[in-house]
Image 1 (cartoon, rainbow, N blue to C red):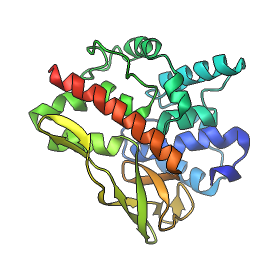
Image 2: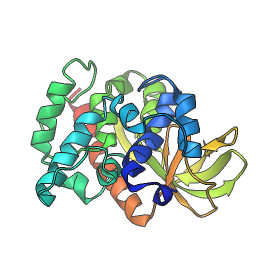
Image 3: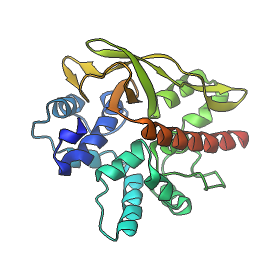
Length: 256
């Protein structure tokens, strides 16, 4: 679906696909999620996807850091909403691993100085700090600290807020059933479990973030929406980045 979009809009479209699910729930970003879904579904309309993406300020430090890293490698200025940059943040790629973790964590500690509850200000290790959404979920958001006090709610939020992957096993008019590895918290440690059945939305009242999925498709999910089709290499990077962020989370949990 992204391949049919004008090259200059691929990054903004991709960013907003992944940003839409929490925006619909009112968790982040500007108002107007219904209009955003209509814009993403039809590909037409007056909404400025680039300006709207800038309203998700939690993602912006990562996008700018990724763009700076790519700019240095290519010796060319790179837009933070370049499709390669956006993909590296939400899914992961070799670019994600190219960002200097010390430079990144120093910036995050400044940009999120007022963010209470996260462990990004307290961890004394930075080798696994990654310019990836999973790091933001586990290290910047406050939910990790709440796990030892009662795991059900924070674990559910961490599970849904991270971008995850799954294999479609059936498709209906608005939902897909799929197999996906769940986040689990056992013995005071986070890990990914064996694949289990999960249901996610791919369409609502005829509007969707991507074309109808097919059985056997590998897809990415954010909250309760399917965001995109991905391939085996995407799964590799997504799992690698998620594992690294879980490792940071577990070391932080040990010190609590």
